[in-house]
Image 1 (cartoon, helix red, strand yellow):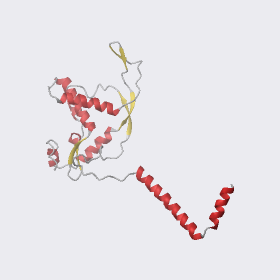
Image 2: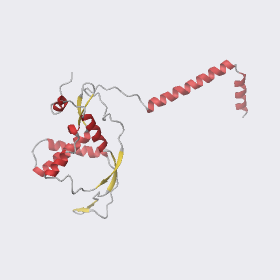
Image 3: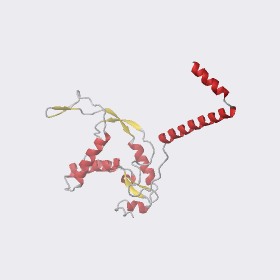
Image 4: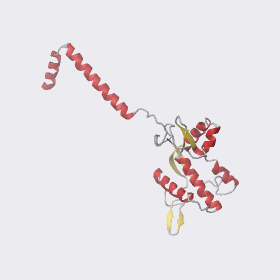
Length: 214
């Protein structure tokens, strides 16, 4: 207490101008500290050329919502074969098949989620029509394997009632288990809005190999 009193006594004896300088410096240091924390938490938006590898890792659409999704077998939709099945599987992609153009050069990109849906559709077609003998099949198996591991869904599924048997092994069916997911419909709607800006040249270009970059 004596030390604190002594400190206040010494401060009280300082000239008013000195106290003002100390106060201004103290306020300045605190403002700088706040600005540094703000820049760390909210870094300035980076400008990308969208050429070569100069692009963000994710589509520039802001933060995705999360939704709860009840996993269950849908016996009325998305069959493996038949006219209805082909139509529903083909319509899972947004307009433009999930492709988009970004940057001032309108460079074409694909979003991984739609790539995964494409590969799943390719494997479904194999079950319906038989193996086409292409290397694309093996690519899709590897791509989906990595996509599932990347998603890392840790939702618990009970092994008990409602299980199925694989030989001597019990496996959870996963029926009516609620998962917390990214809202895929938000991505679909964003793609649809972006596709409305496409020109006829963009429609043709997306199905051709990308031109070389200088």
